[in-house]
Length: 45
Image 1: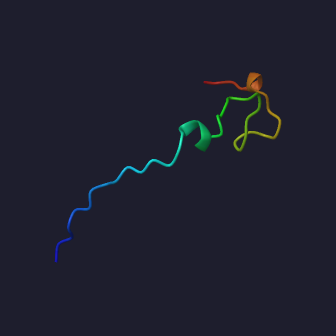
Image 2: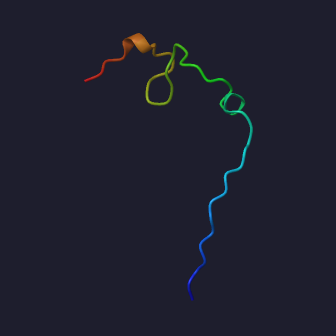
Image 3: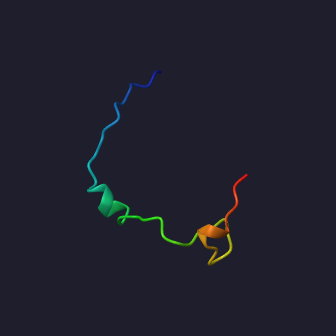
C-alpha cells in the first residue's frame, strides 16, 4: 500500500515580533557559558 502525499500547509500564528517577544541580543550569554558571562569575555578561534 502506498501513502498519498499530504501537501504542507502554512498557518499564520501571529506576528513574528510577538512570538519571539521582540528578542534582542542583550548583554549576557546563556546555557554554554557560566551565569553572568559578558559578551566581551568571549574569544573566538
